[in-house]
Structures are given as C-alpha cells and as structure tokens.
Image (cartoon, rainbow, N blue to C red; front, side, top):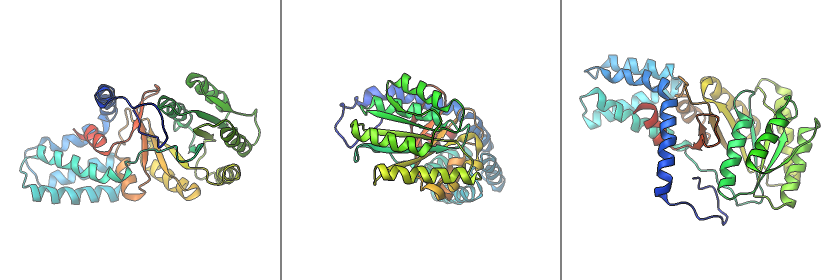
Length: 319
C-alpha cells in the first residue's frame, strides 16, 4: 500500500494486512540483489578485522558501482562504527555496514505525495530501454489502487509503437489516455493537462520520449514539453521523474545529473534491480546526486514496483 495522498480517499488497509504483501516483495528484492550482495558478503567470511578486509570491501563496493565517493564515505563511517562498537568478528562488521548504508540512503527515502493540486501532473523521462513506459503502467496501477483517477498522456511520439504500448497499459489499468497519431509531443501534453483539469482527474501522467542526455535536440524537446505544460497549468509539472535502469550502474548516475540539469528532477524510479550486480549505484546517487527515489522495481508484473525504504534496501542487499 502507498501513502500517496493528501486528499480524501479509501480507508487504508490495516498494517497487518500489508505485512504479507510487503514480505513477499522483500523476498523478490533480496533475490534480485543477490548478485550484488553476494560479492560484498564474501568479504565478511574471514576471521579477522584488518586492512585486508577493508581493502576487499572497497573493491567489492566499487565493483557494485557504489562509486568512489560513496565507497570512501562508507569505509570511513564503517571504521568509526567498528571502533565505537568494539566489535571483533567480521560478521558483526557486516551488520554495522547495513546500518551505515541505511543511513547513507535515508535522504533518498521520500513518499510521492499527490492531491495538493488537481490534477497533479507527473512528467516521466528516461532513456530508451530503461523501462519508462512499463514503469508508468505500474505507477498507474498503484495510483489507481489508492483511489486516484489517472489520465495518461502518450507524448512519446518519436518511438515506433510507444503510443500503442501505453494504450495497452491504459486498457489494463482501465484509465483514460490522450494520444495523437504522430504529432507534436508538447501539443499532446497540453491537451492532456487541459483534459485532466476539465475531467477532474487526480493525476495526469505524461510519458515523454526516451532519449540519451547527449541528444541535445531531444533534451531541448523535453524542456519544451515542460514549458508547454506550464502554459496549461502554471504550477505544473508538479513532479518530474526519471526512470533509470539499475543495471547501468555509474551510467545511471550520469543520467540523473544530466536530466536534473535539464529538467529539475523531483524523484527517481529505479527499475530492473532483479539480477543486477550493480545495485550499489543507489549509494553513489545518495552521495553525489541525492534525488529522492520514490519507487524501485524488480520485475515486469504490475505489483513489482514498490516504495523505496532505505533500511529495507540495505538489508536486502547485505543481510
């Protein structure tokens, strides 16, 4: 369940009812992060806490794409915790690393809140192949399950079949969609925001074209979309989300920096964490570009997108 709303809505399910679903999700996350976690966990199988252990840990964190800055920060923090706790067993060091990682990731933990504006306009960007349109479909499912009325905007007019793909997600979620055959992406967004206001929708989700940060003309198109959305609603977009592929490691961090510079990101959706050996990239983001992570995903099913919780992630990665 997602506590996403400031508006009146259905009564949330009791916490006890949420627990089994959340535990099932954590099992999937733990399995998805196994490649990353196992390479780090092997560091703590020895019998001594010495320089060799920290050197191995440094190498494991770097291989997991935690990045130089986050790796050094975690090592310094861990050494401090080990000294203060006076631990003598490597297995106890791993528990302290979980604490250190959870604290590092904590600033990324922020719920997506909607309802302060009607509609809340959410613009979603990302490079091709990151899982952007699929993530929009999953996010639509979660918003709808919380009682929000959602309108989709098919503004990815560059990619063949992108409109059709989003139409399938709209049908699966039983929500309305604004689209055009070809046409100008910004025009689609203007029509969608205007329609969302006229129809009293809670959320307008805008699917923009996938692009690389180096494609300057396409990045300018994103800026244009944002400007045109503001013409339809001066306060919009209220959220600008970037979908990043967890498998791309440090490239994902580069994307966050580039898209944030172009658009002013408010949040991230991290996808494809199942089977990645580069799950440490969230540590790099936390240290170098702490944009909130609203959701993380581990599969293709509608229920395989969940809110990000720092300690859950740290435990799933290392425990």
